Image 1 (cartoon, helix red, strand yellow):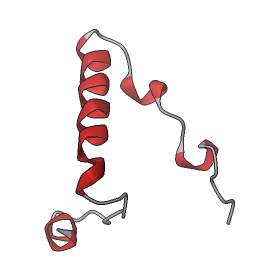
Image 2 (cartoon, helix red, strand yellow; image 1 turned 45 degrees about the vertical axis):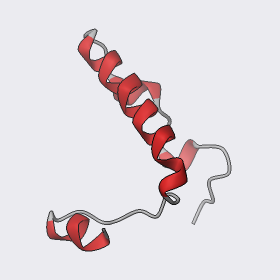
Image 3 (cartoon, rainbow, N blue to C red; image 1 turned 60 degrees about the vertical axis):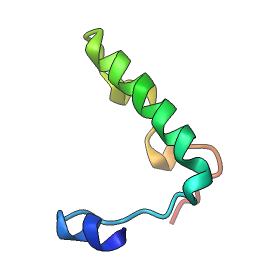
Length: 57
């Protein structure tokens, strides 16, 4: 899967196995719903540096 992401010019991010796929799908449905309603979905999620457990390099 990393090869597909890299081929699109992006950097792959390890975020768990397929057991987490349902969580990712639910998050996408939420974000798309926020966007579809006219709001900015990016404001619903913290920047990675501000997320709980983030490590400041």
